Amino acid sequence: MAIKTFYKKYIKYIILLLLLVLMAIFILPVSVPIIVALITAIIMEPLVKLTQKTFKWSRKLAVITNFSFFLIIVSVILYFAITKLFNQLIYTTKVFPHYLNNISGFWIDIQNNLVKFTEGLPKEVVSSIQTKIDSTLASMQESLLNLISYSNITSLFTHIPSFLVSFIVFIIALFLFMLDLDNLRMKFFHYLSDSTAEKVRFMSNGIKKSVIGFMKAQILASFFILAAALIGLYIITPKYALIMSLVIWIIDVIPILGSIIILAPWSLYHLLTGDVVLGTKLAILGIILLVIRRTIEPKLMGSHMGISPLAVLIAMFVGAKLFGILGFLIGPLIVILFITAKESGMIKLNFKI
Image 1 (cartoon, rainbow, N blue to C red):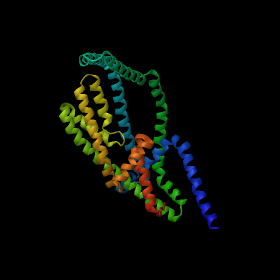
Image 2: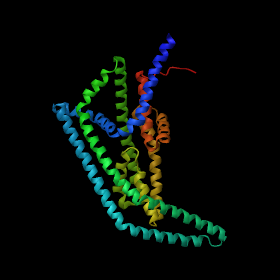
Image 3: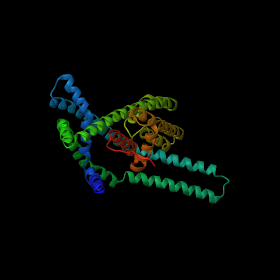
Image 4: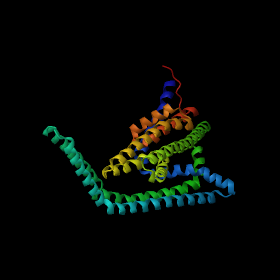
C-alpha cells in the first residue's frame, strides 16, 4: 500500500514536469512578449504601491501614471536609438569609400613590409606566408560582404513588422497585467494550499531580494568599470576619454552587453584604418575591463544576492556553456530558484552517502 502511494505521488510530479517541459518547448517561445510584460509588471509593482501610498490614489490612477512614465521613457529611448541608427547608416554610406581606400592603403603597406621582412627567406616560405595572408583577407572580405548582403538587409527589414506586433502586444499586456496583478495573485494563491502558499511567498520574497541584490551588484561593478575605463582612456586617447568612458559605463550597466560592445568595434576600426598602435591599446583596455568585470562580478553578486561567490561563478560558467551569453543571467537565476525552493521546504535534499 505504501509503495502504491509512493508511486502515485511521484507519477503526479513526473506528469507535471512533462507538462512544464512541453510548455517550455512549444508555448514559451511564442509567448515571450507576454512573459516579459508580466515580469515588467511585477518589477513595477512596488512603484505602483508607493504611488498609491504617497498620493492616496486609487490603483487605477497609480497604474496609469506609472505606465505613462514607463511609456514616455521607452519612447524616448527608442526615438534616440532609431534616429542614431539611421544617422549612423547614412554616415557609414558616405564614409565607406574612404574606409575602403584606407584599407587598401593599409594592405599595400602590409605587402611592402612583408617584402622587407621576408628578404633572404626561401621562396616557398614567402609564398606560403603570402597565400595565408591572402586567404585570411579574402575570408574577411567575404564575411563583410555577407554581413551587408541584400538578403541579410531584406531579412532585417522583414523582421520589423513582427517586432512591432510583439512590441504592441507587450505594451497592451503590460498595462492589463499592471491593472489586474492583485487579482491575478489572489487567484493564483486560491489554487494553493496554505502550506504551499506560504512556501511560494517565501520563495517570492527571496527572489525579490536576490533581484534587487543583482541590480545593486551590476551598478557597483559598473562603477569599477567606469573608473578603469576613465583612467585607461585618459592614457590612450585623452580627447574622448570622458565621453567614451561614460558611454562604456552606461552600456556596462546593462546585463550581458558589457564594455566590449563599444571597445571591440572601436579597436577594429583603428586597426583597419592603419592606426595599429591605438587599435591595439583599445583592444588591451577591452580585455582588461572584461577581466575586471568577470573577477569582481561573482564576488559582488554573491555578497548582494546571498549566495557564495563560488556558486555564482560556477552558475555563470555552466549557464554560459549551456545557453550562450544569456547564461550569465540564467545560471545564477536557476541557483537562486533552487536555493529559495530548498529554504522554503519545497525541495528536500536530506541524504547522506
